[in-house]
Image (spheres, rainbow, N blue to C red):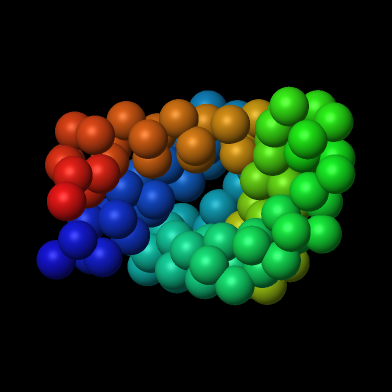
Length: 116
């Protein structure tokens, strides 16, 4: 149940990004948002830890702000892996990753996914 709720929160975050961030387009349909959420979650699960490990010195040097770049890269990689999502550059990817991070954080707290 928690996994389904997390996918729905990510899908809602992607929908908000598609609506409000210029330069990010999603092919219409609920299934597009769910597929993008699934791919985004898989990329964050498999690739993000490796990138965080490889960029650990930069993370220390920037006091964690390099995570914004890593999150934008994960969003861009998601766009590369599916034709349902298009990102028109680094700027929209950074803004989208910030919005997705904020929405998933709020959604996790509202739905109660962060509690054990």
